[in-house]
Length: 580
Image 1 (cartoon, rainbow, N blue to C red):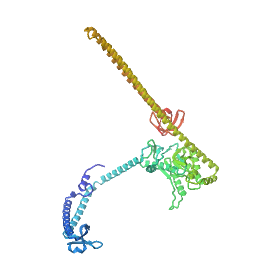
Image 2: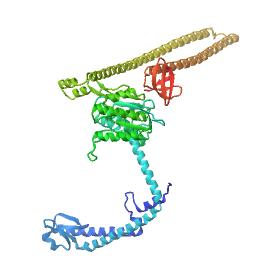
Image 3: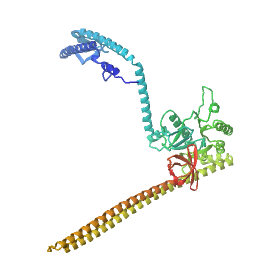
Image 4: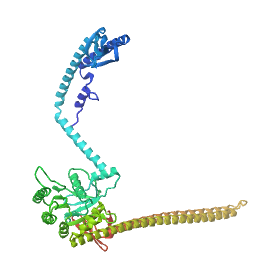
């Protein structure tokens, strides 16, 4: 592709900035339009003259004129139409008015029609000539068009990224996903318009954690979390920035397979469960180590006991293919199987037991209860109905669900304590910094005052010394030796004082620099110590020496096991910086 102004110059000869054909596009067109302009001026003069005459004679209707077939005509009262010379172009619906073209303009309008026809023919000739000229630039124009399409597409993606507050995560060559503060873009926009907050999600997949099985209450955000992962992955693979924290990591999958929602089909005579079985058969056939599976309500659509067992077998088969997966389910068999598989992990959507409301936050590490009865109570069902339903359940099932409830409640309580502790720590640290800064300023002020007092004392001593010199100076004495000795003594005194001042200033500067460096180092150490206190399993950290980011796998005393990409390393706590 190259640039040439020949094409632009030729187009500018024909078109003005509004896209209309210029009068001087050709000499012939210029002459035709000049005649049209002159002819229209003559037609208008004749019309105005005839109209003034008929108004004076009171032969026109309430409206004096209109246009019929692109010709300006007078609205003459039909009773007086024979008194007006001209061509009749019809009458009004009521017949009360006749449309008359003044006779002076009939021939002129005919001539105008001929000129307009000539104008169109000349314009067509000009455009044909221009088309022949442009056709030689066809490859260049196509290239320009493709470039404009690309630029427009890039601009659209950039504007969308700004609107979504999106960023570019670290792209891994190996299959690894670490979504930090990931948002579903549509939900975030909707909530923003409604003035509601959106809870970000954090989900992690790698070679050691290939499958995440999410359970929890209905309307708690399981499906939304799954869709967030799928949508963000599709956006990335289509070249879009995604609404995640820049510290996030993503990769490219060869295929993304999903089974989300009710896919019942009347046309294909398929039930929801039949459709899902067909999809699962296809997934089992094509899945590999670079496949991301998104399975919503895994195993549902059939008898819970039988469907759960079959879903468990499907999960084992997908696991054997080393595929990556995000799965949502209510089935206990699937949750149990996820606990048994080495590279799979459970996760749950948190639920506030005090308010009986979902928190829409994913917690990795343990399965969650469906909170079936709690959600029913929240929707207004009476306790008597709920209790009757509980009596029909296996006591072991109720006990297991209650245990999950208690774990969830304890976890919520611990999280609140941790948050309160972190807030208290921050406040204590801020208070400590404030008082240290205040103490530093007071000490600096006291030191400054002491220096000032010392300076005043020195000036007083110097003044006394000078007074003694003055007293000794005998103005009446003309003895040369006496005054010369005094001058020499004064000179020695001033030289000595100047030397003392210079030594003190140099020492003071060195001392100030040393104190400043020590203070800055102490502040940095305090800040780092405070951040290191927040490091726990799952935290995102940075190795201070190499600036590499990693995820904490475990902590034993002062030793921390950190995963850096595909490498695992044991590092001392003081060598790490807390990120999130």
